[in-house]
Length: 61
Image 1 (cartoon, helix red, strand yellow):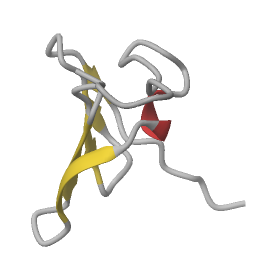
Image 2 (cartoon, helix red, strand yellow):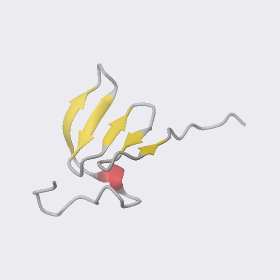
Image 3 (cartoon, helix red, strand yellow):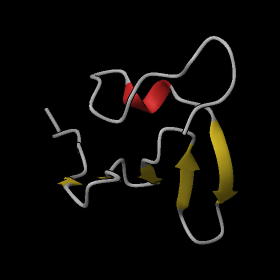
Image 4 (cartoon, one colour):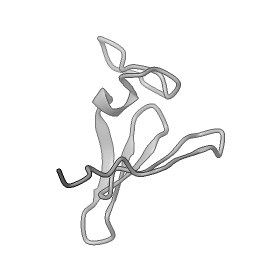
């Protein structure tokens, strides 16, 4: 999906969240990255192949 240079990390890369935002809807709590990842404000992700990455919540110490 990424057409700019340098190319963004792929959706399967550990750095996938570093891709550019192509659509942002903060009122709905999500952004679409150019690698096809849907990034949610709770840090959860939906990958282009349909896999779900659970939110990464910090625990209180």
